[in-house]
Every structure is written in C-alpha cells, then in structure tokens.
Length: 416
Ligand SMILES: Cc1cc2nc3c(=O)[nH]c(=O)nc-3n(C[C@H](O)[C@H](O)[C@H](O)COP(=O)(O)OP(=O)(O)OC[C@H]3O[C@@H](n4cnc5c(N)ncnc54)[C@H](O)[C@@H]3O)c2cc1C
Image 1 (spheres, helix red, strand yellow):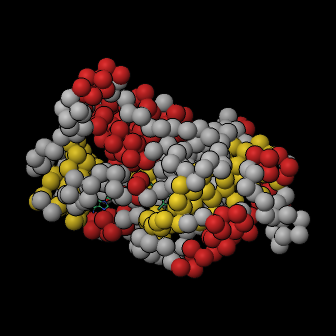
Image 2 (cartoon, rainbow, N blue to C red):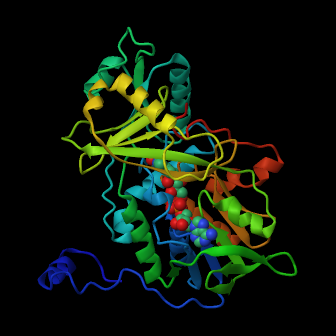
Image 3 (cartoon, rainbow, N blue to C red):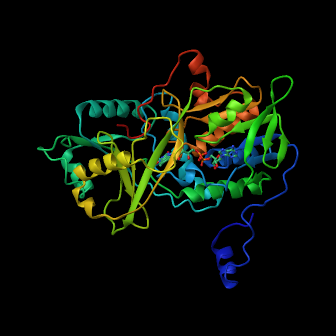
C-alpha cells in the first residue's frame, strides 16, 4: 500500500496524479476461503481489516452486491457519539468513538474527523429527566454529558430562535455531549477497504450473495453468489437492513424488522451552526457539512419498509418541527432527499452474535450503526475468530431473546 503523506502527494502532483496505484485490487474469485464476509459496508470492511490485523487471518473475501461503501454507510448523517442510556451500551460506544478519533492515523486515510460536540435541545420535563439519567450513567463510563441552561443553549446555537415561553413546546434547557463529532463516510469505507486489501483481504464488488449454504451437518458451508458457489466454514453477515432476507435462506428466523430512515440536505450556506443539533422532543437533528449544507434527519418510519426515499408525511413532519424551532430555515432551499434501511430489534439494541447455524455470525440491528463501525468491526472479528463474543458485545448476542434479557435502549436516535 502506498502511504499517503506530503512526499507521495508532492511526487504524484508532478505527474498530474495519474500514477497513484489502485487503492484496492480486484482479484478473481476463488472457490474457497477461510472466512467470507457478506457486505462491504462499514461493519463488513472493518471486520475484515481487524480479522487480518488483530487476528492474523488473511484468507478472507468480502462479497458486495453493489460497490463498496454504497449502502447505508453512504446514506447516513455521520453523527458519532456515545450518549447512550444503558450500562451495557455505553462502554461499547465510548470505545468506538475513541477508535474513530484515531482512525485517520491508523488507516493512513484522512477521515476529516471533526469533534464538534452535540447539543440536545430539550422541550419536555420527561425527556430532561431521561437525559439527566443518561448523564449519571455515562459519568460512570467516562463519557461526557452536561446540562446547560436555555440562555446558554441559545448562545451556543444563535439560529435557535423558536421555542419561546409562548410556544406549544417551549425550550426548557439543553444537554451538551462534547465527545460527539462527524467525519466523512466515504473515507471510512475506502480507508478500511484499502488497509484490509493491503493485508491480503480480497474485496469482490458486484458479487451479490443469493443464498447461504449449509452442509450435511447443518453448519455453514459457504454461499451461492451470482458468480457461483464459494465455500467457507466461517461466514459473517454484515448487510445492514437486509439481514433477514439472507439468513432466511439458511432457515434462520431473527427478531428483526427492516425500517426506513431518511435524511435531506439543503443548499450550502455560510457557517451558521458549529455543533450537531439534536431535538429529541421534536424528532429531528442536523449538522452543517464542511461544504455548508444543512444535513437534516428525522425519526424513522416505524413500519416495515424497504423503500429508499422519504415518505411525504415523514418529510413534512420533520420540516414542520424544524421550522418551529429554527424559523429562519424556511429560506433554505433543499437539494436532495434519500432513505436507507435499518434492521431493528424491538429493544433497539444491536445483535452481534453467533447463530444456531454453526460457523454463521451476524452483525445487525444497528439503529445508529455508523458510530459503531470501528468497535463493531473489531468485535465481529473477535467473534469470528474465537467463536466467543467480545466482552464489549457480550450482552448483545441472540441469547438475550432466549433469556428475555433485553437491553431496552432509548439512546438510539431521535424518536417521535
Ligand atoms: C438516513 C440515515 C441516517 C443515518 N444516520 C446515522 C448517524 O448519524 N449516525 C449513526 O451512527 N448511524 C446512522 N445511520 C445508520 C448507519 O448508516 C448504519 O447503521 C450503518 O451504516 C450500517 O452498517 P454498514 O455501514 O455496514 O451498512 P451498509 O453500508 O448498508 O453495508 C451493507 C452492505 O451489504 C451489501 N449487501 C446487502 N445485501 C447483500 C447481498 N445479498 N450480497 C452481498 N452484499 C449485500 C449492501 O450493498 C451494503 O453495501 C443512518 C442511516 C440512515 C439510513
């Protein structure tokens, strides 16, 4: 792998940047590997990288039905944070946020990480109580969360001019999470892909997996792809939103349903807000991109859905709520809208687990799984190699559904 640094940049500038080596190879698909990872999104690519780097496994193929980094990782709003509610969740997200902060150096790829703080705008006393409770739990695990007054909130976010004392839902205060940040989603996918490839991992784009194959003993034996059968004794499913469509081919039923989550983006405007703004009572959040666009997200559409756009009423609800707090945004022109898929368990916590099919692992149920990519990849690599859950993910196996040991998580995302 050619290092990206000032010298290689200068050298390649002299030849008009035409001689950079390819960031990853496109080798022919072999009939057999030690490990197959299905899905070249953030979780699949990170797992491949840590399998090679931390566990010395390199006979790995990542199989992607489209192009790498073209799934939900390309559709998300890049909020990285660790302000969760449950004792089981917070240490995992603290680890993941810390790993993100070192990722540029680790992968030698500029993640454009911007640790810019998230500010919650609170409008109801039950929500304030819940967030204060989160603060107390987060304190134990070294994650930052602090209450601020309405005056301080309005000072930090000058565009917050709605929600006055006469409003139906007046602003009553805020919470500040200084560990939160944003980065560049393409860089996460490309950085992990390039580094994994350099360690010997093969990435096969345009290779959809059609079904999982079980051997006579019931264990996983490989997969059927559009390019033929590929065999492996270890298969990890990392297809976010499409988990059940694949696992059903091996006769596995999972407690997941797929939902549509959407976002939209404005034209670029001058710097207006330098934090991530989250309005949990009103059901929307936004941040300003480096280009100046407002990147705006709402609550998920709770019905089962595989659509990839935004329903009109979800869009209208989000915009109405946003304008009630940020009335000046009515002058923003919106440029694009899109949606993605999340497969969600009813306790809103992820599932990173071995399954009843020996050799088959899954990583799924990631409601806000972008922030989870580094630690999620590491934990999946651990599970695939050892057969045991990583300590950070031990509460999140399928056993919790057998033992009714749910991790009811309210810190997932903004909810209506
Ligand atoms: C609108 C929106 C906003 C979001 N905002 C945030 C946020 O601010 N913060 C946050 O933490 N999370 C956020 N998320 C969630 C986050 O994007 C996902 O949880 C995370 O990207 C999922 O992990 P992934 O990157 O591995 O998924 P993906 O990028 O979806 O990777 C899965 C890959 O599997 C491939 N695949 C599927 N089926 C097959 C098959 N049969 N064969 C081969 N390949 C297959 C897909 O093509 C895809 O490339 C958001 C999601 C959406 C939709």
